[in-house]
Structure formats: C-alpha cells, structure tokens
Image 1 (cartoon, rainbow, N blue to C red):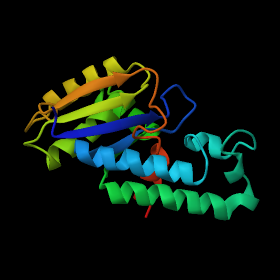
Image 2 (cartoon, rainbow, N blue to C red):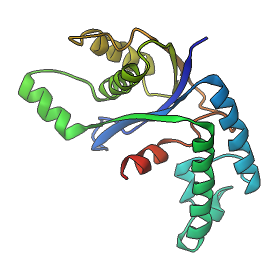
Image 3 (tube, rainbow, N blue to C red):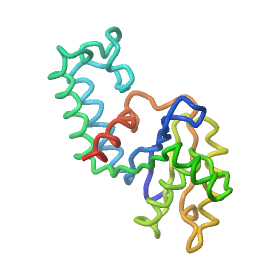
Image 4 (cartoon, one colour):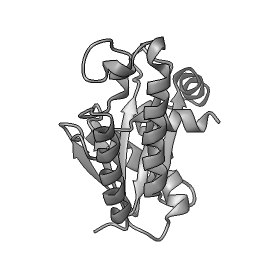
Length: 199
C-alpha cells in the first residue's frame, strides 16, 4: 500500500475551446481520506444533497438548484465554507498544475518541440509531489481523464528525461472510468484548487 493516495481530475483541452488545461486534486495518507469521506458525507447530509458537482451549482434545476442564482448566494457560500472546512479538517494537501495553451504553443514553436498540454500538467503535479515526498510511495487515482493512459505514459517520459532526477519513480497510477462515487474524494473538484491558488 502506498504511503499517500492522491485523487486528480482534469479540466480543459487543447482542442481549441480552452486557453488552458488544469490537473488538480488532493493528496493525503489513507487515514486522512477516511476522515474526509466521513466529513464530506456529513456536510452533504446536513443540507440534504446527495452529491456535489460544481458544474451543477449554476443550474436552476436538479438537486443542487437551491444554491443557484444570485438570491441563493448566502446559502451557496455557507455550503462552500462547510466543504472547505471538511478538506482542512481532514488534512488534505492540494496539488495542481495549469498549462496555458498559447504559451505552450509559443514555447513549442520557439524550441521546435512538441510538448503536450495534459501530460505536461500531469508531469507538473508529479514533480511537485516528488519534491515534497521523494522518499514515500504515492498512488495517484485519475478521474476519467481523456486518454489517461497516454497522458501518464507521456508525463512519465517527461519525468524520466529530466536532467537531475526521475519524478515518476515513486508514483503509480490508477484510472477511474466511471468517476468517483458520492462519498469518495475529489467531489470537491477543481474549484477549490483554483480558488485557493488565486489568494
């Protein structure tokens, strides 16, 4: 069993619709994930919602509709604060990387390279984790990444080609195809990472 387990999700693509790709999530020892799952379920039950998906908060229909719209801002804010507190209380550590696509295109052109955005973002997460947890094993669970095995393969190539050390050597990957269930980690999604990294 790994010393740490991380759950990561991606957002954006380099197909022209977005200006960036992001990979973000949380890392913690197994006992912290247990605390998180218990706290997360309690926070959802408190407000009588079966799950949390950020993209559904803005929808005026569905089980999260009571948080949508300007009139529900106080309830939405209180809900977010409860969820953030669960993350803090469990002791999860955020990890993430963002690759700006226009900058990557310019860099690739300037250097005559063909670096890929999603693997580069994943490599950024791997390097961040390796710098902090060099002597510990890590299992990263990837949530429904588009072409996740290829992204891992290319990110691992990037890690192994680094001039000083292989940031992939203590990390193994698991792929989820169906997404996380209601109580499992990363229902928090990317919003918390982006929100916290902007402060």
